[in-house]
Length: 108
Length: 114
Image (cartoon, rainbow over all chains, first blue to last red; front, side):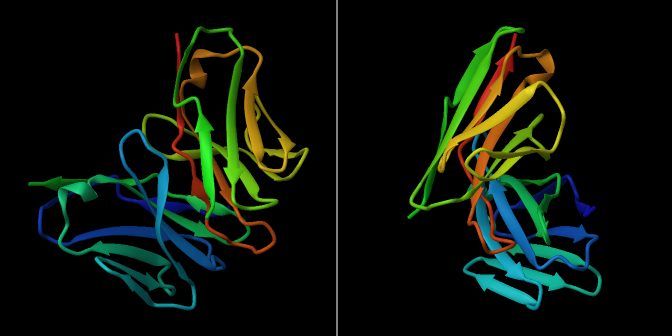
C-alpha cells in the first residue's frame, strides 16, 4: 500500500518562510492534500493539488509537486504564530493515506 | 455549504463501560463517512468507512463497531471500553461518486478511559 512520510518537527522564526516536505510511494496517486490541525481540533483542509500540476499558489501558501521524485512540499510565506500547528500531507489514489504530521513551531 | 458535527467534544469513561460517539453531516447527500483515531496527537488510523446506509467497512479489528442508520449519520460504538481505546476520535466525510475527493473533518472527540 501507499506510504506517506513527513519529518516530525520544524521550527521557524516569525516572518520567515516555512517549508514542510512530504514523500509518497504510489506514483498512481492523483490528488495530494495538505491539512492543518491546531491543538485539540480536527483537520482543516488547506489546499490540494492534482498530479498533473507542478505548482499551486493560494495567498501565503505554495504547493510544489515533483511527480518524478514523488515529493510534495508546502511553503508558508511570512510565517505567523497562528501558523503553529501540525501539518498533514495526504496522497490519494483509490483511498487516502495520511502522513504522520509535521509539527510546526513558530518562534516569535 | 456542508458542515460536520461531532459530539461529545470530550468524554471520560471507566474501563468496561459502553461508548457511543455520533457524527452528522449537513448540506450534502450520500456522503462517504469515516471514523479515525488519533493517538498522542499524531498519525491518523482509519477505523471504519461507509459508502451508504448500513454499509460499513472495518479497517482494524478491535472492540469498536460503527453503524450508519441514516444517510448523514455515523455512529461509533463499543460494548466494553478498554484502556487502549483512549484517544482523539475524528469523523470525516467526502463526496460520493467522484474518486479522490478530499475528506473534511469534524472537530473530534477526546476520549479518556480511566
